[in-house]
Image (cartoon, rainbow, N blue to C red; front, top):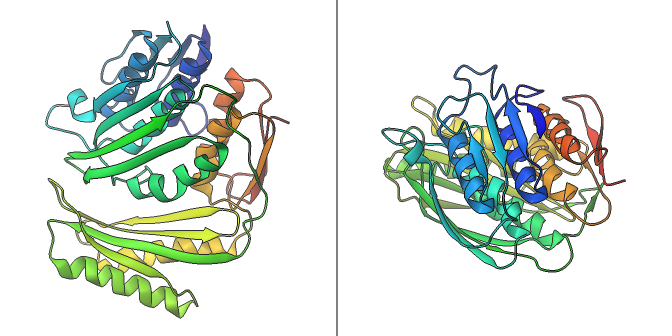
Length: 350
């Protein structure tokens, strides 16, 4: 039984999700203690409990402690990950609904299913565009295309958008399992020249002028910085209200995504400016990957065949924590060079 300190480093839900995914893939039983111990609401929240239940179903795991607010979970896989048709709803773990992130849930189950034999169909319900998680568009435009280069094939589509606080979104996914060689590693030391920038300005159940103002403000700021981008204004079907500006940038060697969510009292122009400024800051920084993609690629690259390496504009707490968890299961696999908040380099499998 491998013991994982859930409060280590960044101390959030990623420790849990990465640990469970690796347990499912390797068959290594694991006990995660002090889950989210330093958070305002420690322990398993609805999205974390849903991840435990989802991964348990995928590998027929025996689980102890799977309940809301629990700070310790024991997870013992009884089978290799099994392809299949699965539906996971974060609201089932919370009274009155939940905007728990379905994108983080997808990332937890997608890699075990990608290594299973056969194709899996997923329906995930909850929050699709919520704080502290990649929006659905990031999965579609950045994360999955990069995994596609490794040979991991998955497609996603959105039926309903889910905003904080009620969620109610729904995304569907197809994950193609692998029966042959492991995914291929990646070498991403240089991002190359900026080729194009695309984006969207979306809103749900709000006046049209809000998403139009977001769109126009983002385009104006980008053009003022020498970037001729294209944005789409989207009227997003949803139970709730919300807005987002999402920009994705295609460089010669990498992709990058930048998100800003609206909230009550936050002007549309500010929503747009935040996303644009993040993109411009990345353009001026060193490193091939933006910091969010860097931490999200640690697990898939650790499971790849051969060696991988990449540079990042900033070493984040999430990156350091994810590397630590992977190294607990696969000792010596991930090496991070660089201080937190500074540009860095990651070598995997060397």
